[in-house]
Length: 301
Ligand code: 4AZ
Image (cartoon, rainbow, N blue to C red; front, side, top):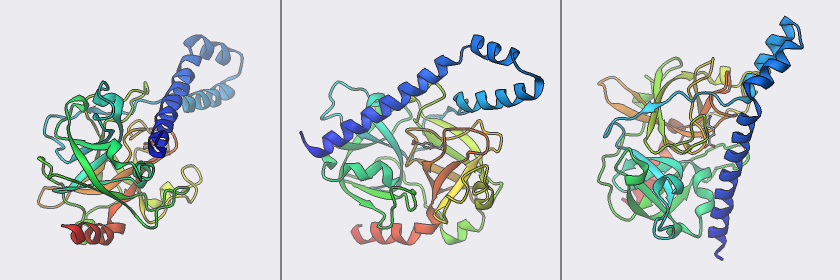
């Protein structure tokens, strides 16, 4: 068997296993088990116990359905239907992406690193909010940011070039001028087909509004304790409840700039759990790699 296919199978197994273990955790905490553990201890311990228990329960990730055509730049990285004929899109999707030029998708390096050597087994899906109705675009080439670090997720960026132009329009990538208007506390919109609190990939694209969090707050001891680099930007709500999750990686974070149009300024990268208080979603900060994007796309267009 081809090595890449083996790797991708391994990846699907990891995905399947992680959602299985998550589902098991949910089932382990029945109302009976809460009540039992709570009645045996005093009020202070009860509060702490509740806090502990809450950490282990998947939170509502807080999304709602996107409307048709609302995020035409949204793309899906999928196992190609050519090699998985009987599988619907929901079973083949593994990451998000954003159309940034007529033949280019921006995504996360960690979504692409295992494709190398087997691009034909993968495809870019776009053109619908329904994961089972996407048009597929063959991938011509993949460019991973040269400074990508698979351990720290620093420079978690990749570009994919497809063989034929997308039917849907690209979203502009944040410019230096736009970036002045992107500040802590601003609202941003995140989208993706990634898992909800039940661990299921979503057939209909979901959206949620979150706030931009300062790197300082995100690097706090209660959050990521220094792991957030200048190539990352955090978003979420301090109380949790709205976040990206597994399967959203590589997908867009957008915000309006003066004049009213949206720009792409983040790409979903990592986080501890999903939608937990203080554990913000961490996104690739596109302004930090705008020159690399321009050079890569510009050289081939
Ligand atoms: C993931 O595995 C993933 N809560 C994406 C985003 C976040 C966590 C995990 C952020 O694709």
